Amino acid sequence: MSEDRLQQECYTWFHNTYPEYRGLLFHVPNGGNRKGREGAKLKYMGVWAGVADFLFMFGGTVYCIELKTERGSQSPEQKVWEILVRGEGFSYYIIKNLIDFKKIIEYIISLNQNK
Image (cartoon, rainbow, N blue to C red; front, side, top):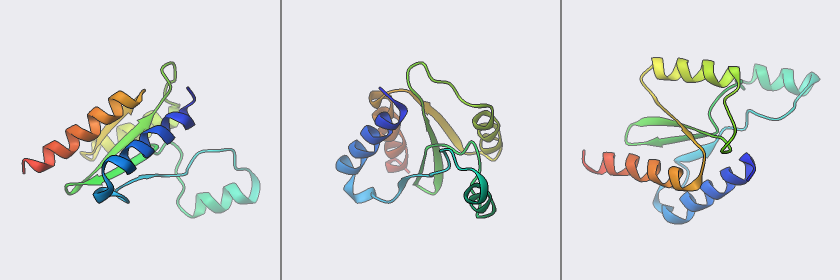
């Protein structure tokens, strides 16, 4: 399964399972091959290499979720960004399949229901 397909499956499951939380989980489109003027424009607009695939804003915090294939690994920029956000106290998860994505979302939601 490709990373794009995994992301689509995760998002669709979340969208259908938690309609009351739609808009709180979203993709940051910072990837792709953008060169020249378009790349420069996006950089000056705040696009940052290495940002996690999903941000989940829930219970007063932001959870960073990076998706990878079973054999995938983080880029150097993703590793740097992970260190940066963890240093600021944010949670960062690397997810490699839909089952683990479901578990982490359910865990995050259950943590906040017990507050």
